[in-house]
Length: 319
Image 1 (cartoon, rainbow, N blue to C red):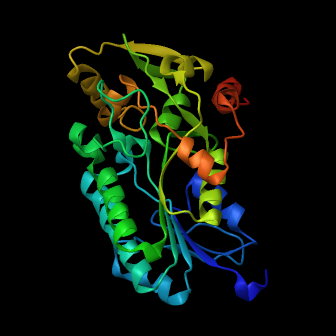
Image 2 (cartoon, one colour):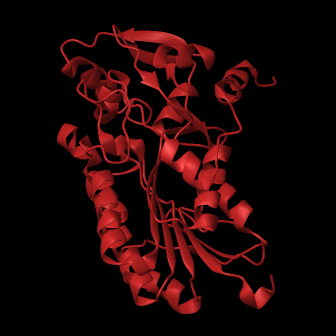
């Protein structure tokens, strides 16, 4: 492929562990433009990097300065990182501005990183959730409204503007080195809270496998909505033990009690009240469609994932 023929790919959330891995897979084969709202990311010399908030007017300069062929929208503010209003501005208004700019500048492919949280955790969920299952997360908690709205925006653009070739990925829990989501922060701790009487089945995916999945979805460009998950799962309390954590049992009745404890002890980063139901009821997603469509399967098993957290707890600081 000649230099002039290389596509230019914009990657949002470039400071994150997943985005960095995706960029490393793109680099060399494609021109990459890195964008993040938190910091200007240090990149290789030939990768332009910008610190900019997507919902602000200045974001359009990125599209003016580069002929963007594709967008990999990975950046999202988690609930424990900011206020509800800031999350809405970044996740919803920022995404809308991004999609509008993609239309204005005739971007030919958009890949959106969503999450399995959009399904919501409920005792009435089916055993296996496929891509057509209803998104009930916003019915359970207002703290996931921005997550559901982001995906709803993406779906509207996917159906209304097919020229965007939009793909939406809903991964299960992504773990591994550098990952800073709530589940990774929880399993990194020596003491992990568990709800007495509950140990829901959960799915886990190594961050390198998720990066491979995003790269495969980008290269094969088959628009649609896909769950991304392995075909195995494990009980939450077993995962806690396998990661070398000691269990801290919490009473789950009345339901407000674990939420109150989490708030009082400032556990919002790794055991946020809005995710309490996900530690009570299983949310198992069916990843068959993605695996078959993109000929993908994870290379790392559960032990590969959990051993990272287990080994980190065995490292003792030098005197």
